[in-house]
Image (cartoon, rainbow, N blue to C red; front, side, top):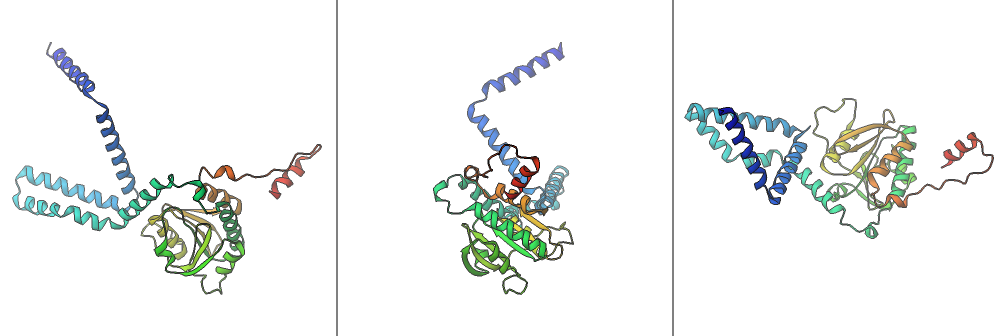
Length: 297
């Protein structure tokens, strides 16, 4: 009898809670869920994750000190957490800045009119892929940054102003090993080469492959602090890599690089403007001739 009454009270309470839920409560729960998701995404695979673990351990120690009545330890922890917020802001400053810059850029991206986009992403993708492939075959080191929503004015100021149309021959000349600007990064913004010889921040990751040189670390470092797309050509191996959002993908060819850059740089609304004109089929065309026609494309 007691068990039935307990179950009845329990289900009655659950039904009462469900009936009292309003639209504002649902929105509140969803907002908190999204907030916790982004906090988890922010600290995952970052050094902030280890710091959060340490803070949780300190909170457990504070709780234990309060329960057991250890006054000295409790006094220390309480004073420590009074300035904890300021300490967290100082410790997480690089990560917080990166997250806020990306959040601001992403939220405003969709508000830009298509007609105001002066960047010819199709030309940029084609010329960068062509230059990277040529430099890969010659084992010429290169570091090409394609700006997206996060502005790179501070990075551009560290180099020499170019202000030229994106051209594969110009990119190859910039990164020629005897050229004065070949050691730095070349920044592409607004569909034009803005500057060359720019200095990029190095990555703070500790688990980077030791075989990767300074160019790859610089590419990762910029991609961690902005939404830029960074193309790297290794001087030792000629391998083409792309760094985006703090992750490095290697082993691209000209065709795969062009496809990958198109997905990253071309907006969804602009993709309809990029069309591959296929040759008309002729009667009696053999399979070999079709493959040759596709190669010419």
